[in-house]
Amino acid sequence: MGGGFWPTLPLKMPYSEGVPHWWDPAWWIFQIVVMSILLLTLRKVAMSIDRNENAPKTSRRPGTSTNTQEPPSIPG
Image (cartoon, rainbow, N blue to C red; front, side):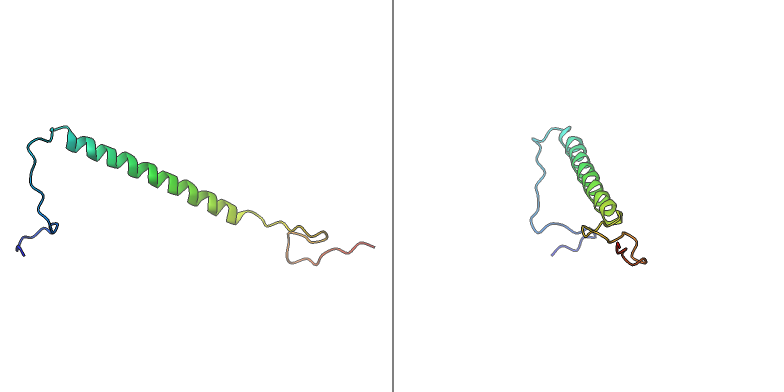
């Protein structure tokens, strides 16, 4: 094991002189765009779930009210 300060991968990646200079910035821009889209999508899903949880619950049974403190009204 090397005694370097920075951690390294188990396999050494050799430097390739055939990679163009524009590749590294293009790769980072691609990663930033993909991660931004992913984060914005997850935020949108989470906000819609929170919005649905805060919506008032409606009952399908007749005679019940949305306010749980009042007893149901009985006609007649």
